[in-house]
Length: 367
Image 1 (tube, rainbow, N blue to C red):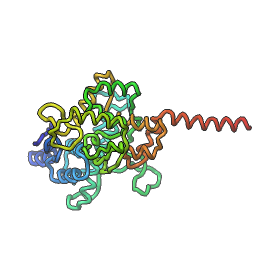
Image 2 (cartoon, rainbow, N blue to C red; image 1 turned 120 degrees about the vertical axis):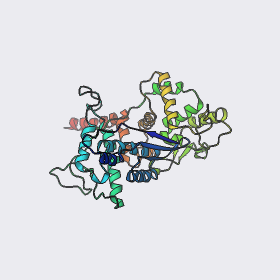
Image 3 (cartoon, helix red, strand yellow; image 1 turned 90 degrees about the vertical axis):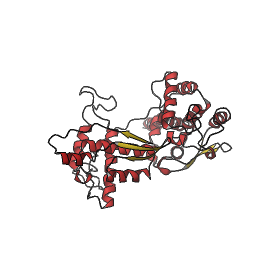
Image 4 (cartoon, rainbow, N blue to C red; image 1 turned 90 degrees about the horizontal axis):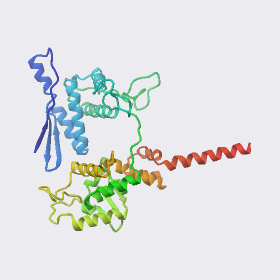
């Protein structure tokens, strides 16, 4: 099955018909090829871009592939050129257009005070574009000799070993993720209507699994005797085995005994329970709909799957779990990604401050 997403073409004032057709060949519709409920391929209608997306599909998750395709479509809709003709000036102009006010100059986000797209969104789009040009340079047959996306703006300081100088093109704010209070967690869990839904929520709240990891679980991945789960489809292709509370396995058992169809043609743990897709693997959209419905019934303003995961690691850190252990549980490649939970865990900072303050006071008394 193919799904075609189209965008309005940009204006071409002063461009002849032949040039117009050449430029439009870069800005084709985004075509998604689906197999059942799974994304198989994405195409933009340009040979070089489609080759790159095929390369991304072989090494990234469907959501990453779709995001990269959309980012490239946005870029080449704005910068109406063939890849070999794109310059650094085009990239800087693209950044400027992305920062332009979307809802009037007087309307800004409270998060960063910006009126255009968020810095994170622009940074991700630049990363997608830079990845494309790195690929084209490596190919050597595309007519692209250098990557037009600069790694940073030069300053008077010396160049670092990585070749990056000065400040980055986009400075994204480091904001703390939201976590749920214990009362909100209880209200949210109580609003879930099935054992299946509660088991998925507990996998995120008690085990810290990502949304895609929950949906990717297969029956052999569950090890109730050990109270552990094998995560075969972790981010970046990294597998891991993580402990999960016995509450999760009890809920899964209830789901398996009373709700999961016996005639399922899949070994995925979490499947659709009703309708024409009964017994088939649950989709990302289906899980998001379940979470959002429970949020509304619980009267909560904001709940997402990733917020449940953040809540898990924050509580584990507050309970004294070592940062390295939290990193292993989360499946983070770098411990720098895990350090944010030091700031979310209120007791850690307060305890460190009190110990330091007491040491300073003791020195003052001796003086």
